[in-house]
Length: 479
Image (cartoon, rainbow, N blue to C red; front, side, top):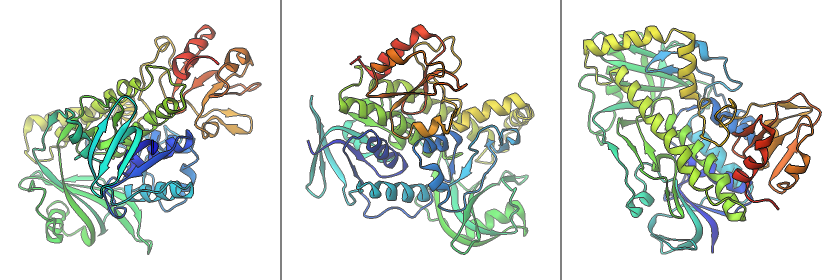
């Protein structure tokens, strides 16, 4: 074997997965067909759960120190959700994908993991022992497992012949990074009476401290083929239709046309090959949910691959990647499609649709509705199906960041091991059997007892009689 895991694609998903494997102590090769890292911002927001996961690996603080990353307010279908702003320790932040990629690539390089660029995959074959990947250069990499993180037009998925059902794009809209004059910082969504619309979100500042914005626009007659270049005049005219002379384009830094295609791989696992990120699911980029969902795919899969390589994974563990993440991806596609419909991105002016959105907007003023939508968008409401979760409200959810004397529980997850919080010092004997993969902490504190997986999800709480079964289910046989 040349390596234990080959990750194809060095976007946020692939880079995050490579770091998870590093934390697990597993050799990894990260290959990308591009000759250099993309300079395009692409996605622009990082949700609360993703930030928590970065904190659990010690990455959040240095990432936030890497520039100006303003906090934003969540929205659903252009309807702002102000009552959600202070619900989580880490609120939604504007951190462009290009910044995250650069940060993660530098972090990996500091640990002597370097992206192999100019590596275009052309073939793969798997057998009972591993996967053989062939590249256009003639190079061959043999690995135990391969993960496709190579985007919506995934070569790996194509070579597998994997089913990718769903809907092709039926329209396009414009996404651009710009500097604007006259734009209010609080500005988010605006629409003209004839159906033209503009969305504006903060993207931090350029090197001279000037505010940058992520701009999206569309409406009647604005759905053009993806290969038609976006011009400055097109953006100026789109702004003029909605804002008149109040807002002007000062600089266009990057623009592309995006579609509302919605597809999801039927299976995330194909033997020793796994699909993650946009290789597994594509949809209209609303709320950066594609990037965040891909990063969460990587966090879910990384520790499980690590356990498999190191020989202690229960037989079913790798299958739980599809079982847990496929429903999450399907739910994201549904909420994005619902938002796209309610936003009437084609500017049809359909009165029935306007009535539905009006009713939805009225409901969205309710605190409970805003909190539900926030759970959907932020990732904090994701609950994985787990044994013992029926009568335990914490099991399956992201673990709260508890204070355990001088440290936080999130800090103790940075080594990539399981974590048993045992404040009453009751479980030393049973936990000792898994001491090589689970740390027992919190004795003498007033913390809540719980067992936390390496990806930060609670997999046991409450019933003392269920702890041994939970340890065996998630962390393998006893020593």
